[in-house]
Image (cartoon, rainbow, N blue to C red):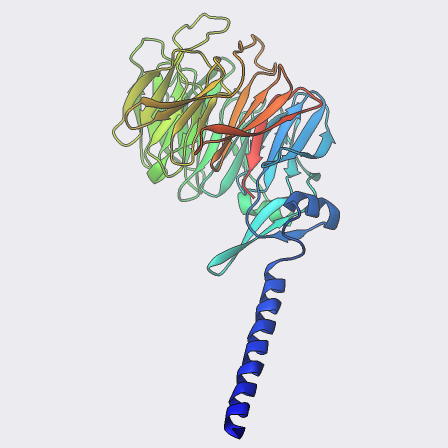
Length: 415
């Protein structure tokens, strides 16, 4: 009997110990009440560790910025800032580059992740406009690729580039790359610390070149009238839009893919760095004040081939995005998201989101805008001041908010 009571005592002690350890582990794994909204806690307590990465949105309006929770679409912060504002993801999942007439500003959206061995820790804090600024003469395109961010100044034809991850430590050191003349252009990092930059003059861009880490030219092509934009694809390839097709840089040389029309302009692209297809717009009216195109282009960077896809509706330059599985997604003026399988060019789904709309003539005027982050598509509707979250897997709207200001540009960070 003594031995039996002793064994039972050992079992009871072991059970209590295990239960205590479980409670301690649970306390370590959750910092506070997990039922509280993550961003609400961040606003109350400052920096906070989250159970998973949390996305935030940034939308511009005339006179400032709204930063929103990506799930609830609650406005977390409003920043007043004068001028016509443009927003671009910096590329680190946390910061957004905001351009005004003379400056690139850095906005901290307040969510980020840190790698820790075989897992990551996720954090949130109050969003804010930082004191990090880059002066520029007519700030233009901002493009993140190959772990670096390039900001192009149209007024000087120069680009400033920095290691994207350095933003977490404050103002990063930058490298300046100069083209021969001022023009509306673009620049982006390529593999092996190189840089692709457009070639142009006062009449516009007409080609692109690549320079290595020492600044020496390694590739050049001037057969790209109206060169506009640059997008990265798999295996280090880059697509630059032209008025008669695209240039494709494959890591060594440029090649040209001609449009099927004499004038077939591709000026805006959407890509994924691990996919071979690039989605582009497609315009065929060289003298139009504003063309409302009804076809998009799909560029196969591996096979050097272009396919045109008719949508049955028009769209604008803020209508192009890529889905979580590489889908090409276009916001049509019919108010629907047109989901395209890039390999076949087949429209696989049409998701109704907003009412029909018409693109304004002035490119700076607000118009419905599409941005995709993760498995969600975000669509703004200036006419109603609404912003919608669309679950791309379900094909349905899961959240809607009405803003106090008319939304214009839209972007997001992954956290």
